[in-house]
Image: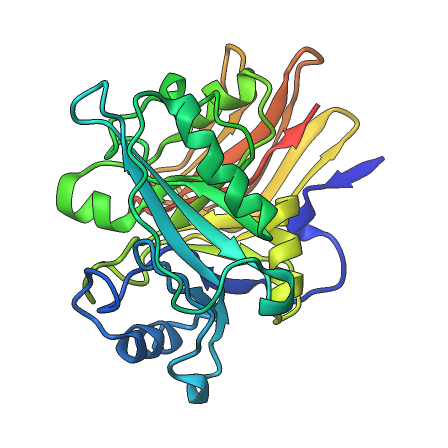
Length: 306
């Protein structure tokens, strides 16, 4: 029996390309909303969320581009009991009639003494019809244990272009992901830009198995029907009779992650791997895969939960 990961089911021939975390001059970016949308359109994006700091947005500032705008914003709070640690969360929402937030609604930062006090921020997002995505754990100096008690995250950032470019951080938060998965969380991962200037934008994205409308994309994100990438394409990821299979664009490295030792890595210095498979142990708690091309760019599947 074949069981496909949700990104690869159905009849969609083209997965939608989308950005889930970027900023504009509405907060602290150097690019205007119009410029930001147009840059993403030029790079083949189908949808984009303008997630300015504590400033909610539904509006499409460049509708002529054909880029769909997903509602959203970014919320934040410092952990006051631990100098140098903070909690940032992106909200990705539904359409206005199903969303408790309003256009241009502003919020204050939410400092807390420990992670449990931030639960109310995430709860408010969810109650108002939004998904909560945990941001840049390495940049925030928050290992898994610093946010793993907060309930309700749909996903977290495995890659964040702004942090990669500016700080060489959040290049691949796979170890954090594995810790969360081993702890029993059914959490997905997204590649984002968190762009604050043109040079940050369009370097990390999700490919979503959805129709091009807010409701369909929201549902697909909530269900994990997507994969994340900084370059490579993934064409299929499925389980059959206890064996995991992946098909992708030519890559130099493919790794299956199962939460247990040993982990097998497939490599080819010429970068010509396009398909591999691996028998998964019965005791494995989950199965996910990372692929990397010969330029060092990565893509990540979401997991099968077992």
